[in-house]
Every structure is written in structure tokens, then in C-alpha cells.
Length: 82
Image (tube, rainbow, N blue to C red; front, side, top):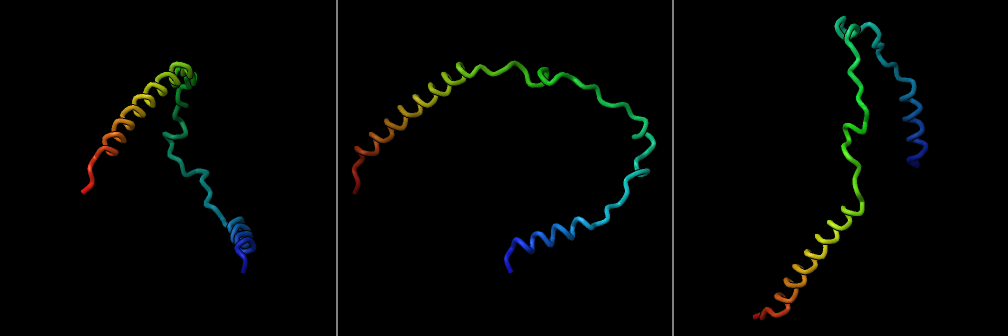
């Protein structure tokens, strides 16, 4: 049997499932609790990123890494193998 008809059958059967009612199950203190204070999203995110300065930093890191890898490659090429 192909998997697609089986998947459709499983999804159709799961749609018939009875879920328990949640109404009336919460405690009294939850019903009377205050909503949390909402704050603007920008305050949480902080200052916007500057892509130009970040690109410069990444480029400097990559250049330094390339130099280190080139040194390591030269050292490995000069090594004598017994």
C-alpha cells in the first residue's frame, strides 16, 4: 500500500478524536489574574544591527583565519614524511 492513502486515512481518523473540554478547569486566581504588561518590541530587540560594520568584522576574521590556515598549510607541506 502506498504511504499517501495511509496518511490521508490517519489524518481523517485523527480529525474525529474527541478532545476534553477545558472550560471550567482553570483555577479562580487564573480567571482574575491581570494580563502581563506589554512593551514595545524594539525595546527588547535593542539597537538595530549595522550590516556594514558587521561585514567588516566578519571579513577581518576570515582574512586572519585564511592567513593562519596558509601558514599551517606551508608548515605541513615542508614536513618530512618518514
